Length: 290
Ligand code: UTP
Image (cartoon, rainbow, N blue to C red; front, side, top):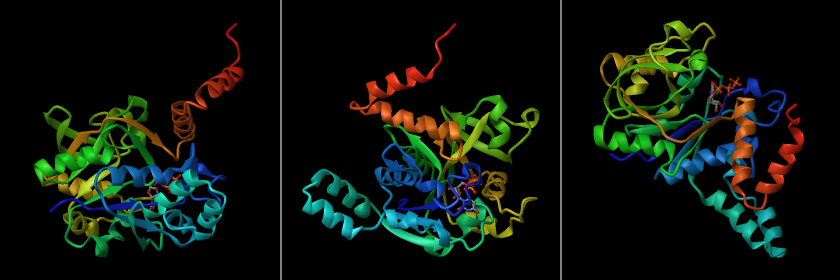
């Protein structure tokens, strides 16, 4: 069966991005001209996924509203003859079939994925973490879907991270069986630098099968009270049922200020009307070398 559905958890508190995220969801913070979550949905659609399942919470409904029509605004743009903007605004509402499920308590990524169980039923599905942006001609999640189609096994996306950053990620212990493709022996959540089995980090892209729900059911909460997806992945790895693919592309974590600001500049630099003015302004900000 083909992968049609994507679960996008967006219910987190976004504490790293406070105070910006006091009332505005992290996923709505703009990256250049669009809310960051729009890039994620666009990546899903470009990869052939049609049904987007947001796992959301009651105070972040603005996320699903962004993918709905704003009829008053559309009428205004039509009256004013702002056709390009009208088409752009409309296309966001027509982009995907949006399904929303609630995570009533923020009990971690594993718990968020579990909340989508009834919608997923017995199909393979993608998971894209709502604050990890990836850009490449072959979209990030599509790189995993291609592996899934060949291997018919759950696949996680990994990228190599610098040694001093391994303790921020889930890190895999794996054997490479083809270039950039790994059979996973184990996964460790945020290991100490000297204990990390590799520098290959989980980067918020997964293709899973309903088998994961059985494992999530048995995972107990960690010290912070969260159900970690990594623990359920570990159970798959122990049964030799988990692959990884090294994802190619630029990645930005919206919850990290350096990444967030860099993502804005990355896109602005691709806009021919802005590029040179932006470079001039940035030059003004950098103190001259002594
Ligand atoms: P993060 O690990 O970035 O957590 O979640 P967070 O709570 O949003 O942000 P910080 O770390 O406090 O700054 C990764 C993605 O998973 C979602 C988040 O909305 C984010 O898109 N998430 C996280 C949930 O949906 N539910 C949770 O319980 C936790």
